[in-house]
Length: 538
Ligand code: GDP
Image 1 (tube, rainbow, N blue to C red):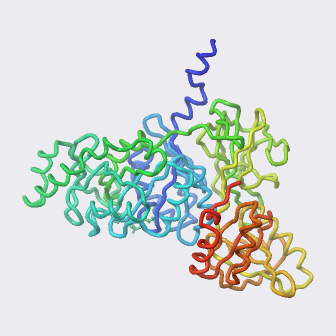
Image 2: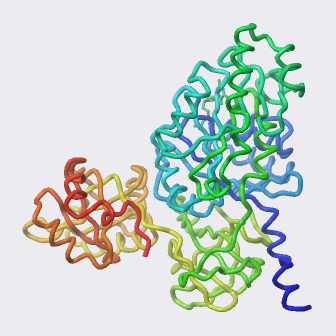
Image 3: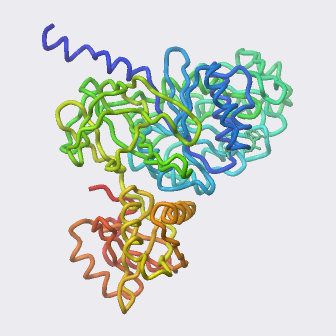
């Protein structure tokens, strides 16, 4: 084979990667993520009847039902990734928990995705948690595709939704489909790319695909129950927007500054066919990652991957800890020997046989874009690179600034050493940020988290693994910013203001804590917002 052959022809691994779409849903609780996930499976051909995921959400213990779905339909599920295949494409949907489960893990999981599917409620527009998740997509410059859900309910008019997305997120929202009728009159979707109108009939409880008639705009309008005035208004709207998609800036889309927008109702299965038709084309397959020196590490290189999530089992009967690895290059095979980039230690990769109690799932081989869960031999860290060829290291997981803070202590003076040791370990695992803050007589320990549930996890693990009963006390801090590594001058400037508190985490990363939005604004004015990081990546 000549050199040009090897350059021009992608290898087998790159070919496998091209068949994968690894994405995460970004949404606010209640926007319809669970419903949409289930309908993607229904329309993706992995489920013949919807209903089971909802049941699973209602009862987190319904793992056995879930297992049977897994076996019958050939879908694999772990607590972190849901896989399905359609038209020779493998979709890896990464789980991004919401509500109370929202944590730094949620944000880190997004780093393992190649695109984001932003689900918004037509009545509410972009909400708080969506904004936070979107920030991570912006930071990583990954494409975001928008699905406006619940169009069967009263809400904003479609043009208002587009403005809402643009104003809240500062991106361009380009319609790819358009609702025919709103609220109670919602009955179809006009596919602005294929220039076809899909008219739907509801199926009972949305359990089966909706009966659909596909026709031209005029034919569809004729068949619809819209009034003449509504038909005319729709024609006018479509004239206004119909060329927007073809004019969409592809570079802007790739970088996440332009988002194509689809409308629909996940509950009634309206608009899902149109969305899925284009999702495959729009969502990018896995690409080569840049290593620490900035060189692209090709997909066909030997196996490499990075750890984005560590999960200790909360059940004391199953003490194993899993590490979730996003494959970045090469083929993973169970039993492969790899090197851990941080320590140089060699590890044989065996997949954990027990994950989250009783959800059993063993992966034999994986390719770029896939997620593998492994036993953590104890020295794996969030962001660690694993490789099997020549040494490589990726620095892809940033530190996210904590938003919740608690002062911690233990009442038992004999447990102080365990307290520090335990917290150091949990901070290394990426469960919590730990800071030491002087209090006049000594140092007190402060915990910082992205989500409130992380405190409960710390409390539980400190008690069960280190025998330390933690005493937690709320403090007045409500935001923080990381500082650049070389930050003496900035620290000097900030120290002159007594409403700012500068400290370091257990890895010696300097961070400023603020007790009000005003203090943060003042600090930004003093040292420049560009020196105060919401995310820190060395
Ligand atoms: P999640 O919290 O984002 O996972 O949201 P769910 O999928 O659990 O949905 C929240 C609620 O909205 C549930 O009661 C769903 O039945 C409902 N829902 C989801 N999609 C739609 C939709 O398209 N139309 C309507 N009317 N309700 C919906």
